[in-house]
Image (cartoon, rainbow, N blue to C red; front, side, top):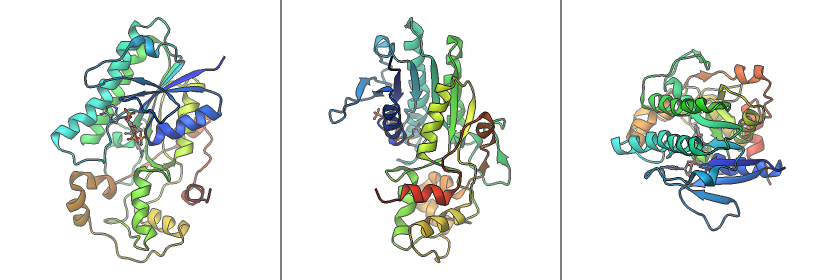
Length: 303
Ligand SMILES: NC(=O)c1ccc[n+]([C@@H]2O[C@H](COP(=O)([O-])OP(=O)(O)OC[C@H]3O[C@@H](n4cnc5c(N)ncnc54)[C@H](OP(=O)(O)O)[C@@H]3O)[C@@H](O)[C@H]2O)c1
């Protein structure tokens, strides 16, 4: 019988690609969304996270739940109101799923939740963070900690729960790479700030496969969702320029310029440490794209 996967936030960058891959693999996929999109053929269940409304019966038939929903981290300035939206959209949505699962007789077979490498704190250091490291102290770290704790509370139901601390997702269709590539495509590529901050990245297809790996193998674990070979900002931008056939010679963009443009969010591009991919590799997950040049060549290949 066809197995059914429900993806919250399935309309987003990651969810859209995951949907394509799952359908190709023979799964039935549905999205849990704040609105019905008439232009998609994907079955959509509507929920209202603000009002904590979701019909439990509407999600009972799904074998697996992948929880990606959350308000964009970089889309808007981090005002107190926006920070609350960023946290509530993640924690309350998990709680809403928990409430629905609690009253349903048929429980999912596994649950996989998104988290982010922001869990460790946005700092530049020589430490390579593993899943055993503690959460950091800044806003994103606290957000990720609360987000992960909310899915931890689903453990009482007995099915396996995995959490994936996602790095910078590389996709041609959106997300950070699209923004980073814009100046590079105009021949204006330059390192940001010191250029020494690390940028732990992952090819979108490897990340989708990691989510699938977790539920298909009934994993109950926390994994970093990053590629094994990481580079600092300068090396990353240089590699991107090379793959796009563009020059890379300009001086670094000063930190204060980025702070003026992005405010608090500038730390997302100005700071970063390496994040280990050892645990998931040892577990048996096979990456398709381990190094940046191969990943970028695949992303920008003509098709
Ligand atoms: N892309 C990355 O580089 C990256 C890195 C680290 C972590 N992550 C995390 O991974 C998850 C998926 O990433 P993504 O890049 O696919 O994100 P995305 O493109 O922004 O999609 C997230 C989805 O969440 C739903 N959503 C947005 N605001 C919401 C709100 N206020 N309440 C409830 N749902 C809301 C939306 O679906 P509907 O409009 O259909 O409701 C949206 O399509 C996110 O939680 C993100 O924080 C992503």
